[in-house]
Amino acid sequence: MENIIEIQNLVKTFDGIAAVNEISFFVQRGEFFGLLGPNGAGKTTTIRMLYGFSPRTRGKLRIFGMDISTEYRKIKARIGVCQQDNTLDPDLTVEQNLHVFAEYFAIPKKEAFERSRELLEFFALNHKKDAKVLELSGGMARRLILARSLINKPELLILDEPTTGLDPQARHQVWEKLEELKETGITVVITTHYMEEASRLCDRLVIVDHGKILVDGSPEDLIDRYAGRHIIEIEGPDQALIEYMKKHDFEYDDLDRRLILYEPEGRDLNHTIRERFCNEKCIYRNSTLEDVFLRLTGRGLRE
Image 1 (cartoon, rainbow, N blue to C red):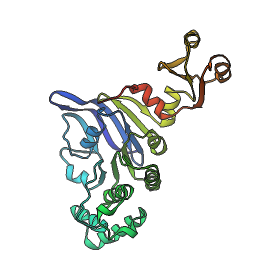
Image 2: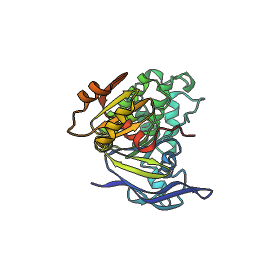
Image 3: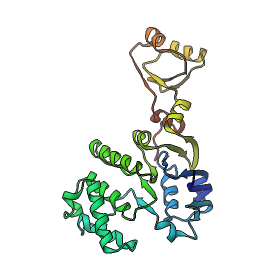
Image 4: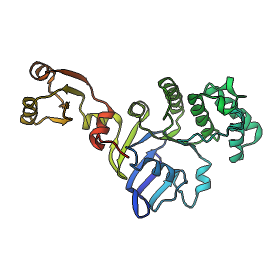
């Protein structure tokens, strides 16, 4: 399958400090690819290099087989970008924001009008086409930014935290639209802090930290590999439980007042743990991508 994005040993430094440090990955045509990591991990820096906003320090970065530094204009015409910030023009109506953006791609006026109407209908914004941007809810504004990023019918869509700050209802509405877009065969690269979002949308993802890639794989594979199928959370673990875990060489995280036990494949620990060690409370649940993320990047707060 054709690679839409090819990155090899990509580096970006600021004042001699590597924000992105020798990362390599590829994205295939039609793939929904995720870039995950804590704050300051290098996600947004990587994304900005992808769409040419920030020049790379060194390394290989090719999109559609072209070098971003020498064929930027050709690449830009074939990609759409949805940035974190709201960059809509508050002085224009919803529909006018799309028309003006279409002019950047030299889209003929008639085609721009038709394309705008299609996108407003797709994102359920028809009833707001004459409203000013400031009259929109947060969810509507995000849907409009997404619509704008699709005005040129891009082959590659880059989404930088597209649902940050949205309430659950608005977030799910955006997810549903992204799933519909996925069915059209468009290639998508997304950064997100929502593990549920990544699990639901991504075919494959990488987790980065301190500018380096930690893992690469499908959400399902990464969960099986790093967290197993099930987890037992034990409140108020005592020393006897800790000794039991060590004796049987189980994988666990000791969080002082809470212990996270990663149940190995083929071992039914639920009954034993409940009978012998649940002094306060036990929660038995399926493992998630968030468990993988926390195991690999840690649980401490980042500045």
